[in-house]
Length: 71
Image (tube, rainbow, N blue to C red):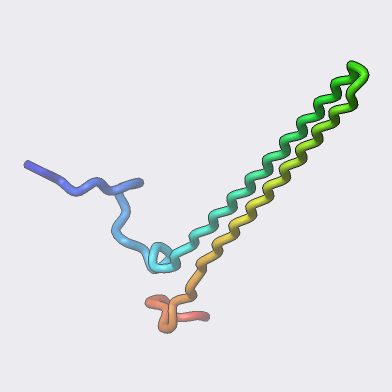
């Protein structure tokens, strides 16, 4: 028999209807290149790259009508 995967063996509780999704992505890239050549000729190369990406997704809907009465 193919039984559904149930965690804890309890039926779907109203708390499961409250979806809570939180995604936080932070990417920081810093590249610094410095080249200095001095042979009676002055060559100076300076490259600075700074990339900062910040993604924040937060989804937390609240159930409109809870299945359990508040006492």
